Length: 83
Image (cartoon, rainbow, N blue to C red; front, side, top):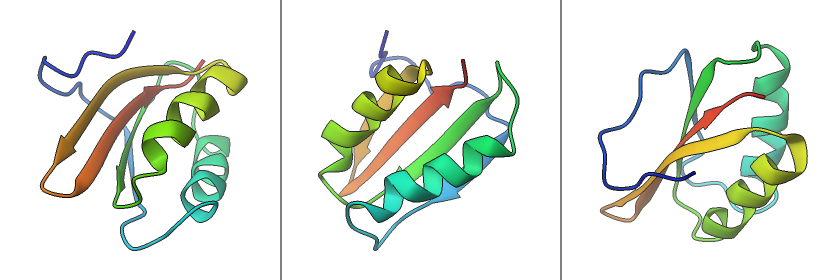
């Protein structure tokens, strides 16, 4: 469940993909989650509007939970709990 109204959760790792466009943000997310453990939260910062479509699909396909999503001044924040 995506909660865009509540405050963002604590996170264990951060990935800044600002300035990158599809498919690079998702490719970097794949690499980052390989170094993480189930239950940990990854914060992703992006500037590509396509991530609003791609990140939820990434989570759904790989069994992760998109716990928080927020747009802020042209940037997109995502908090993903690894499944």
